[in-house]
Length: 174
Image (cartoon, rainbow, N blue to C red; front, side):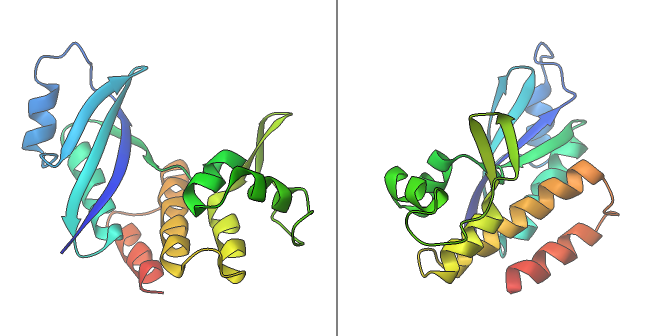
């Protein structure tokens, strides 16, 4: 089995509660490093599982079993140009040139703007664009798509229990 690393961001447990760490540990989060930041539980997992999809879904189930609400899974699928550079292994300058259309054409448009001068891109769309140009491997594209799907399903709350794992594993398999 492979060890998969990701972070589950959760809410709903009081940091003043003496037993929150025990509750998470007993619920199956014994492979996570826990902290509280800005009122949220940060559970950094190093989970052994056959697939990333099964690792994420089982971790989310464990966090929920402890009484917490899963807010999102990171790394987030919305990225800045600096994030794109970090995740792709390309320089910040190269990514800026791609984004401005000065090095290749059709770089994906931003998906969101937090502030007018700080746009965000959908990492899956950018990863796919980079992969088509042989700048990123296929596994990074699959991981990007999987994380986007996980977070979108958390936002929309449409996935019945068990359906998410099936969809994610089908994506991960290609």
